[in-house]
Length: 209
Ligand SMILES: C[S@@+](CC[C@H](N)C(=O)[O-])C[C@H]1O[C@@H](n2cnc3c(N)ncnc32)[C@H](O)[C@@H]1O
Image (cartoon, rainbow, N blue to C red):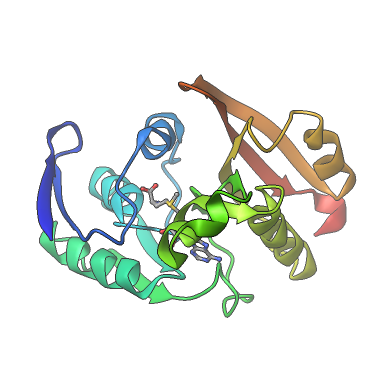
């Protein structure tokens, strides 16, 4: 386990090898997301090291965060890193699939930097931990679409921010999401070495809630 300092964000994190190390996608979200003054409750799915909620909680002392991750190592790291940055009173963590046991919950905002790459023969050889971090399904976005379905089934009307990669997803998909009852917009995009990342904000439309 190595301790890393992130001077730009004034935080430090212990990140075990099997936990997602913050990458450009993480920083893209952190630099683009807007936390409104009246937001009190953030749900982060797939927290990894906890960096996104830790930075946002640090910047917004009134914000309470609940972080889920399907990986037990990540959940443990998030708990430790919250204490390391003196944010244990603002951050709770639970090891679970997406927000499966939280259907009564209506946070002000949900954020997920998800696994967004498609699986192929090469990725089949990845370790289970790497698959959880990187692979979103055969097409690459099934994991996120499952969450859209869950939000709709449980009438959870919340701003949901997530990422899609051009390697797996195209803007044409926006129409399909609208047809499924969500208002959606691309709020930022970034060109990476071999792909483009889209930060998408969505919310279940009133008529569907
Ligand atoms: C790309 S990493 C992002 C980690 C961190 N949020 C960041 O931006 O640095 C994706 C995270 O989602 C978690 N994850 C994958 N599938 C999940 C699921 N079904 N429910 C909850 N977490 C999941 C992984 O374990 C991993 O920590």
